[in-house]
Image 1: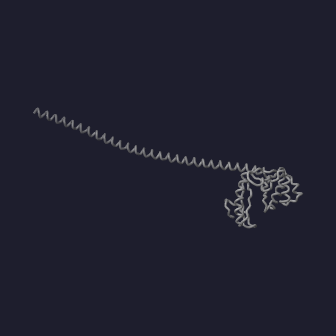
Image 2 (image 1 turned 60 degrees about the horizontal axis):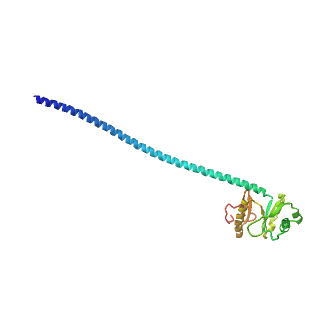
Image 3 (image 1 turned 90 degrees about the vertical axis):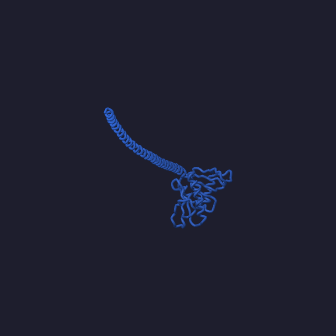
Length: 248
């Protein structure tokens, strides 16, 4: 009987321990499940944060590109505005120089072989003999200055003449058509940039004239030169917008 009682007590204690152990195991399982749930939630949050960071990083990169594009556009705009201002200033300087040369003409093709030439006599003789201006009137035209202009090329050095009265210059220019068929030319004295434009346009005009399909003329408009063409005498002059040798 004593042994049975001890066995019974031991069994009860063992059941109690087993019950307590089972309870502990269940609690541990519950804690593990809670931790697993929290871990899974943490992983989801980390994944979400990573996605948000990636999107934010991409957004920042996109903003950098937009900023660069905006800055590039601003720089291009500033460059264009600066170039426009420089061109306007250049044109203003050219116009001032053009005004200063308003009373001048350039005469090309006059023989300069005489070492002791009197440039004023040569010029007045040109006015009367070549331009068909009455000699008395040609000799009476007041000239402020006249001299040869040094050049590097071959041929006679051109003569620059400065008139005192603008009307006298207009008379000379309007009589220049009498030089047709000779080697002598009389042109407006223009700033260097406009002379270069006139030189380039003269080659285009020559090609057009060579085709004999239309007339040409080169005029100064503001600070630049323009080439105009027309097919018939009664047609209006049309400005060319391209450096082509066609009439239209």
